[in-house]
Length: 242
Ligand code: SAH
Image (tube, rainbow, N blue to C red):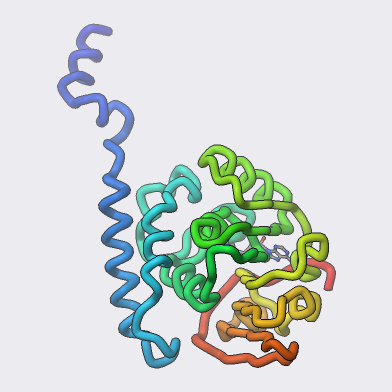
């Protein structure tokens, strides 16, 4: 009997024994990038640009998104949509990751703060583009998992911590750029304070579970703040004690 089972398994091939072969993730990643480029053209008017910097796409091409989603969603990792990551949270839609990254207009020697580590995917994309990323997550289990992922993938220029990002990360401030991946109804004043003159911040602003506005904030060299609304978006709420 055992021999028969083994023979059947061999006939089906090792992949079917394990429940299907691994998809060609690299090919799927390339297709996803093509899709994002189409989305950029379609949304060009509201986002004020018809292409993103090449280096943003290169970063997306280098980060294995399937390693940042729960095992059961791996096959869907390269669909252009958000996916659940547990604890009621989601990994953002790849187009939104690309857009928010492009809006920050990053330079290689810069330091970026991300509020809302979640899976760690966005931080890993940022880490391809700048010298250092500091990322904070309020949910302890997610913070821990993301930290382990960075280690496993050998990403060394991310400092990840568990804390309430509304208050930023004063120990590492000021930042050249800040990205917030959860929505609050106002721009957190501590984050404005921790932004370097000449710095950029991108964040969704609006009530929880409503449509929010993706907002680009610039602090000019005189320290004055300029804001610009880019696109209606939907993010999970910025929680915490504020
Ligand atoms: N950037 C993430 C998307 C995460 S969703 C990714 O690439 O996967 C937003 C995350 O923000 C959630 O994990 C949520 O727990 C976290 N969050 C919400 N409020 C926060 C706060 N005040 N400080 C830090 N993280 C917060």
